[in-house]
Amino acid sequence: MARDKAPKAPKPTKIGNRWAGPAMVISAVVGLIWIVVFYTISDGNTEIPFYSDLGQWNLVIGMGFIVAAFGFAMKWE
Image (cartoon, rainbow, N blue to C red; front, side):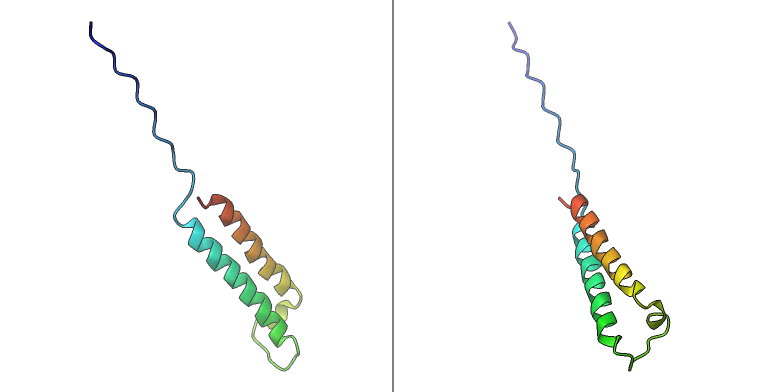
């Protein structure tokens, strides 16, 4: 009597992405630099075109990059 081979278990699917780790770090660093530059030039002596016109919205943009970093962290394996 011949023995039947046991069925092979399916290979697990990868849920992570290779780009998620670097994207997370880059997004967090850009957000941090954005906020630091905003606070550095907020004394009024330095003007950066468009950047200075945004005013307090620079905090929202910087925090948006940091929140995006948390989103990338969820994709990272």
